[in-house]
Length: 220
Ligand code: SF4
Image 1: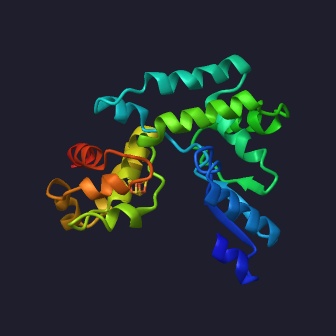
Image 2 (image 1 turned 45 degrees about the vertical axis):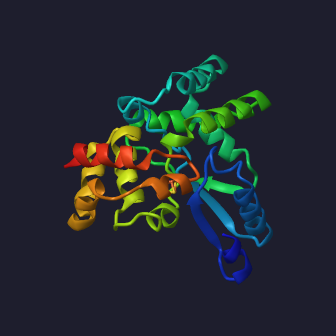
Image 3 (image 1 turned 135 degrees about the horizontal axis):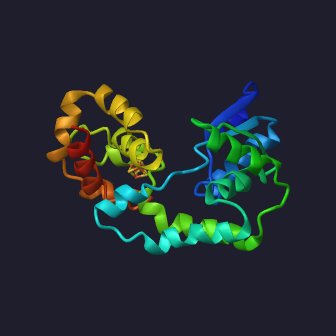
C-alpha cells in the first residue's frame, strides 16, 4: 500500500483490514499514505475470524478470549457488528467487502450499517484486547515470513486458510476445495517439516506445526 501510494495511477485498493490489523503502526502509515494520495480503500477480511473451535480442539485456552465478545451483546451489538463498525468508523475506509452467505448475516450487516451509535473507547479497547488474546489463532497471511523459514516446501498460509474456512466460517466445502487444489507433494511435507524457525518468526505466535498437522489429518 505504501508503494502504491507513490505510483500516482492507483485509484483503489481492496486490502485485508480489521480490528487486528488496523492498530498496527505499519497499517496506520499505509492507510494514511493512501488517503493522502486519494486512493479509495475497501476493507476485506473484517471479521478476522479466530479459529476458536479448532483452537480449543487442540487444547489452547480460549475461554477468557471468548468471554470478551459476550460483553458486546450487553451494549446491543454482536461482536461481528462491532467488528464492522470499528472499520467503518475510520473515515479513510470507503467501504467494506463482506461475505454474506445467508439472509441472517445480510440483515445483521444492514443493522450494523444503519446503527449510527459510535463505538465507545471501552468497545475499542475490548476489541484490541480480544485481538491480543486470540492472536495465536489468527493467521495474518504474510506467508513469506514463515514459509521461507521451513526446511521443506509447505503452503502454510494456504493450509491455515483452509482451517479458517472450516472452523472460522463454518464452510468445510470451501476448506476442502482449497485444500484439494494444493500440490500433493507439499501436503506430504507437512508431517516431515521442521517448524521451529517459522514459529519463532511468526508475528502472531501461531503453533504452526501443531495446527498444520491437525489440519492435514482433518482434510486428508
Ligand atoms: S508468519 Fe504466521 S501469521 Fe504470517 S502467514 Fe505464517 S503462520 Fe500466518
